[in-house]
Length: 166
Image (tube, rainbow, N blue to C red; front, side):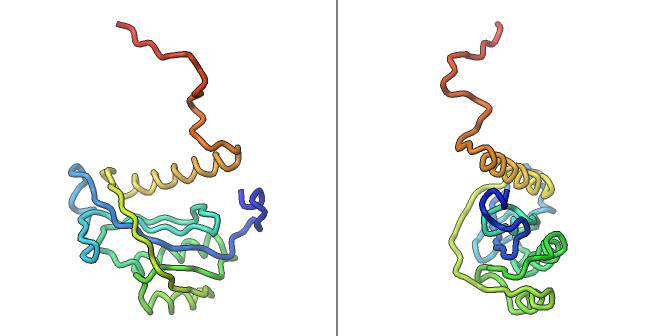
């Protein structure tokens, strides 16, 4: 995918971001937390993407987990899977110890201004939330590879209709 976009096949730069989302009432309380800054009870979805927006790593935690706390294992996984990474951009939620930890991994970590995004998490288990992020990325990559801009499972020009017996 990266080569098709004219990039080197191994990423050298990435972006880390975290999003706190409210959870559905069916989500077990033990997998949730409170993001006091955003006043959200739910989960935090932390991701690392390359500069094309392709997923490199994902971690879903309780919303009360600090960005830099979740970022440490997330960055370690990304560096293990993608040893060519040298530059990381993060938002202002990261702490000094995370910047220092990145430096020990040979990563230049730069803090940039954040933009707000909110949504709701309805999955009952964090690993399902991670799986949904992987599915969304698979869909994105498939559409980029095929040149499709819309979902291809339904042909909008088709006159066939599904008939339900009864």
